Image (cartoon, rainbow, N blue to C red):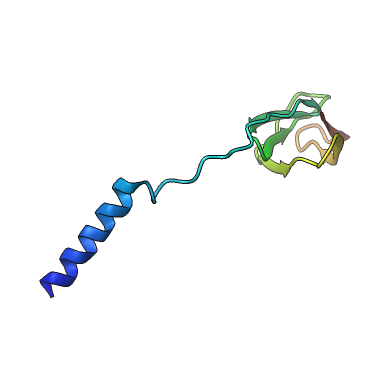
Length: 97
């Protein structure tokens, strides 16, 4: 029983120190230009971005963060948003270049 435990500890140590436990690096380091209207970009990565919807009337920012991937070329992401604070209905647009 002790030998099985020792093999398990040795295997875990090899995984940790050999780098198998870390995520691979992303090779695509291009960051695309984003132009938001009615949104705030919270995080931008090489393959996707995250944003929060923002009311253009009262300035309230939604608590929920939304993620999206990039289109193959240039494009515009569109979404509807109704502000819970003032009730204004608006279109969220993020132009991606």
